[in-house]
Image (tube, rainbow, N blue to C red; front, top):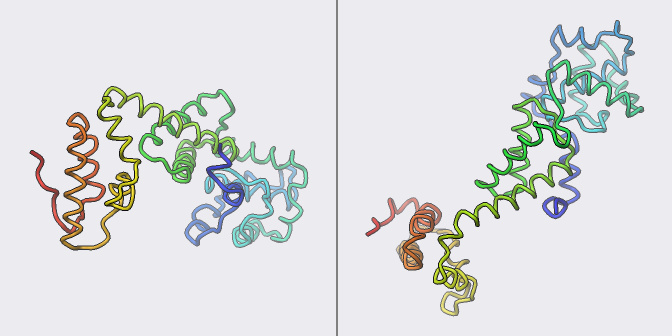
Length: 268
């Protein structure tokens, strides 16, 4: 289900380093005296390990996770850290050939920064599930939900789970939101309303499209015909069922009433 929401290229982008802006470079890739002490050679680390650990240390607050390919970090970021450490930036190419080294360094950086993990069944993961469900009640875009989850995890200093795990959580949240929405409105769906909703999906010869497509088609110009079409849409929705007046007509007024036409007509 998650691979259908994101293409393989999108999944790869979500796993990798993005481009970095100048502001991000300065904000996240500036080592403090305490940071320098943390990666100091006195801890038995060579120049390559110090540089690689520094990249992980700065990447975690920036992205909320550290890509497996630490050596693919933005060259300008690596160069900035190398200059501060007084080492050759080319040393990054030899860093982390042992996966254990990268894992140990990430664990050390997370502990130093006060970040936590979110393993299966943990309170942190359950809180993320609830956060995603709440957001999915407001938004249906997988990309937006993924971004909101990333921002939430950064705000709580929680290392982002793997991209496939988080993508599946987004899919689950969307499914849960659909089921919860239906449960909340099911009592409003009378037989008449169900029939009216079914008719929205039937092509209308006069319109040249389904009623649903007509209703959600936005206004594109400032003409009298556009205003008339908006009034026709509101009238149609209001005639469907008085119980759903506030749920449908009010939402419709916000969705397709032209802003330049002022406030929608007063309801009676």
